[in-house]
Each structure stands twice: as C-alpha cells, then as structure tokens.
Length: 365
Ligand SMILES: NC(=O)c1ccc[n+]([C@@H]2O[C@H](COP(=O)([O-])OP(=O)(O)OC[C@H]3O[C@@H](n4cnc5c(N)ncnc54)[C@H](OP(=O)(O)O)[C@@H]3O)[C@@H](O)[C@H]2O)c1
Image (cartoon, rainbow, N blue to C red; front, side):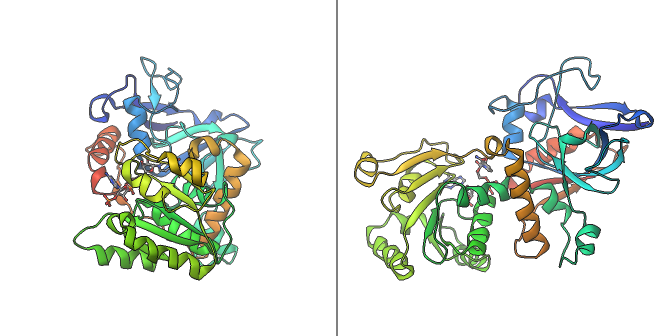
C-alpha cells in the first residue's frame, strides 16, 4: 500500500480557508492492467489554480467522493511533474522511471502520489533518457513541472493564429517581463520573429531591459514610450528597417495598456488577450476596427490543448529547446514538502499561495 496525500476542497473560497489534506491508500499490489502509479516530483501554484479554488475559473474539477473523502471534494492543482513508479501489465506507453505530466487540466497535481489510467498522462524524457539521446541537457524539475502552461501559451500565441515572416515581422506585447512574456521573447527569437515588449517604468528599468535583451528581445520600451506620439516614429523606423509589420499583439494587462499595443498593429492585425492583470476591460477604439480592420480575440491554453495531438507536438518542441539549452525557464521559489513532516500538504500550499506575489512558487516532493 502507498499512502497518498492530496490537497482538496469541498467548498469554494479563499485557499487559506477551504483547503484540506486528504490521506488515502493506493493498493499498488492490485494495479489495473492499463493503470500507472506516479509519484509527484513538483507542482507549482498558478493564478488559475487559485481562481479555481475560489470558484471563479470556468474550468474546474468535479467534486466527488472517489478518493474516499467524507463529502464530495475536488483535488487542486493543474500543472505538475510526476515519475512513474509502477505500471499495469498492459501499459505500453510508460515504464517505471519515466517522467510524466497530466494530459489534461483538472487532474489535481497538489498531491504526493496518484493512481491513474495510462492515457491520463503524457511522457516527458527524464534526464537519463535525454542524455542517452545525446542531448546537451536534461529537463530540470522546474522545467518539467511548469512546461504545460506558460511555454505553450507563448509558443501557440506566436504561431497558431497569424503567420509572421521570420526576419521581417514583429509582434508587440504588454507585460513584457511576465513569465509568459519572457517565453514569448525567447521563442520569437528562436523562430526569427522580431519582438517589441512593453514594460512598466521602474527604478531598475535598465536592469530589466538588460535581462530581457539577454533573453533575445528585439526592442523593449516603457508604457510611456509606447503611449508617446513622438516615439511612434521610432517604432515605425524599426519595422521599416526589417521590411516587416507588427501583425500580432499579445495582451495580458487590459485597460489603456491594451489600447496602447493595439494602436501599433498594422492593418488587419490581431490582438490576442490572454490575461487581465489590470482588471480593466480591453479597450479598442472604434477607428481601429473600421479603418485598420483590427481583430481582437481571446486565447486560452486550456481550451486549445484539449487537442492532445497539438499538446504533444507543442510539448515536444519545448522539450527539444530545453534539451538543446535554447530556452531558459522562468525561475521559481522552491519549497520542499516532507511527507510526515511538521506541516501538512495543504498548509505548505496555503503558504505558497500567500507568497505568490513574491514570485512563482514551486513545491517539490
Ligand atoms: N489565457 C491563458 O491561456 C493563459 C496562460 C498563461 C497565463 N495566463 C495569464 O497571463 C497573465 C500573466 O501570467 P504570468 O504568469 O506570465 O504573470 P506574471 O509572471 O506574474 O507577470 C505579470 C505581469 O503583469 C504585469 N502587470 C501586473 N499588473 C499590471 C498592471 N496593473 N498594469 C500593467 N502591467 C501589470 C506585471 O508587470 P510589473 O512587473 O510591472 O508588475 C508583469 O509583467 C495572468 O493573468 C495569467 O493568469 C493566461
């Protein structure tokens, strides 16, 4: 028997109030022929996990008593990295020691172990397997545990909707220093696209610009520069120099920041909104629609990656970039959970949620 712990909630509310640890046994001696048992290596806290617990996220796990909870409960966490520790005798897509990520969201990744169908997971190479393939590098725990949301968001937004011509075309993004924004900068560089990243002014602006430039940013400007008519001529000069256009805008802020980047789009350009960090609605002047035929659309990685073929293809590309050391992961603040230690699993996650404003939180096991 394997003693598993999982963070659950039976009612929506703030994570500090509603999370509980549920402990149950997995009978590893009687594993089904198409089942696998995994142990968790790491699972992060994402903004969507918190919204899900609060009950304000459109996609949520069902509340059931399947794990033996006294009242219908839902497991928490959507992203995470697991190691396969046992496989049923008809499982062909996994072997013991493989690394795996949930094939879909709502799996409940804030847990120590899980018993699942083999089709519930997708395989990732573990570091030994990458080495055996002759790769420069193996995935780190952080890369594997955070591979399912932010890197695919950046890659798909850049490639799935608008055809940017390498060496010529541009995309513009606000929140240029966000985790997604940093992946977008790196991936656009890998694909040969030009990036124009808009960030908020700050005392250490040059330091942040240097960091984004070192990731491969083409240009980094402040919100004030983006809003300035005079500076607009400089931006036009940049796009003229490459012979391309700004065909895509990525918006994670909303409000006047979304207007600011939409104004820089060429005729027939597309703005994809994937976040609303300012909590302000997207504002698009009528003239941009009528005279420039700008389109505004939403992007939701959860919806797009329900297509498991697309998910596998997207993850494979990201794995390859990590193995070739062409992509840097966003750093996370790591806390190790000790099963049987002083703190229960839900308490460790409650602290991580509370500390989320200090940076991305990753619980390792
Ligand atoms: N739709 C999807 O499929 C999808 C996928 C992944 C992420 N997301 C969403 O995308 C957003 C960004 O995620 P992330 O993990 O990359 O975030 P993050 O690393 O925490 O970065 C947040 C960014 O937002 C900026 N920001 C925050 N409040 C702002 C404001 N009032 N005005 C202007 N800028 C502001 C921050 O700039 P400062 O440094 O200046 O504070 C920073 O650049 C989140 O809303 C997340 O839920 C959506």
